[in-house]
Length: 408
Picture 1 (cartoon, rainbow, N blue to C red):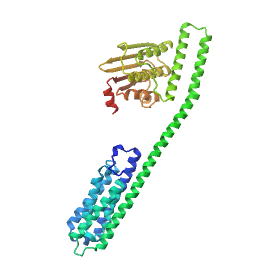
Picture 2 (picture 1 turned 30 degrees about the horizontal axis):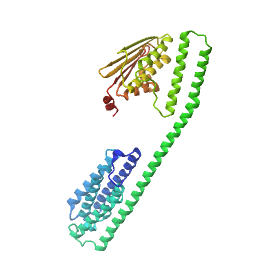
Picture 3 (picture 1 turned 30 degrees about the vertical axis):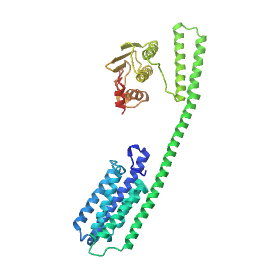
Picture 4 (picture 1 turned 90 degrees about the vertical axis):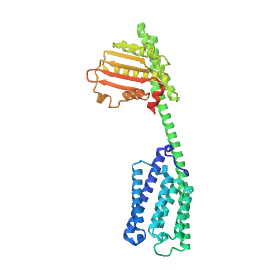
């Protein structure tokens, strides 16, 4: 961090770290401003030669210091983004405080340590040593010019040399400590990220074993029982076909889980098969005695792969909810592809519900459907009231540039 810090590249942890550090520096600057005013009030003779200049410098420094505290406190601005400007302002203001309060005999010489310390925090040795050199140059200039001496002889050369060495030593110590701290913090960040990745990997393995030993084993057992029952059953051809469909669905579910465990993206449907899979789902509802209406224009939708996948997930979740909760006798699905958009709705005549409880309660299924549509730049709306069923309305743009603009 020996160069100017680009806050847009900081992690959240680094951002908080820099903010706390800048807030501490801002409070210290404000304390220096208040102390200077108090000292001058206790000893007004310090400004006898330049009272107007002293008043302007001290009051403006107090206003500047207060504004800096407010900006950092409200997270409006990190002064690291304007480090050069703020360090220059600190150095100039302190130089004028020294000039207006007794020149080289001022009691505020130690104020030069403030820009040295803040420069070391921002840039390490590459910042603290140059700022110390600038402070010493200004101080020596005041000594040689005698322009600000308050009716007295300037301090001796020995005192000037000692004070100059003091600033350079301060710059070296704080610069080295700051660079060491920054190196240690970078190491801690690396260790923190590594620990987070390890924890995520361990959690993934735990979930993998839980799914494998729990859900996959249950599905495997279910599949064996379906196969055994179908082999022994003397049911009608329709019922055997239903069992074969259940068997195929179970195999596909197991395949999706294995893909997930292997870190691969699930592919619930092959591209271009949305309507075929949707009709399979609706045939199951018809087998339960539910009247089904499907209106699609055109009959076969031509959708991008990712939109087709998300639309299938949403429709399947909606049909599952109708089967499990709605107690409906009729379901109507409408899909329209037009003007580079796909609009759709799914409606039932079931029990319905209070929207504020059913939607704002953030149930997982409803929240998942909404997220799948909205992350692709679409609109998701739920309409319902007790006794009047549910209606879900969706609209998704098919233009990838529109979806990208929304996500950004």
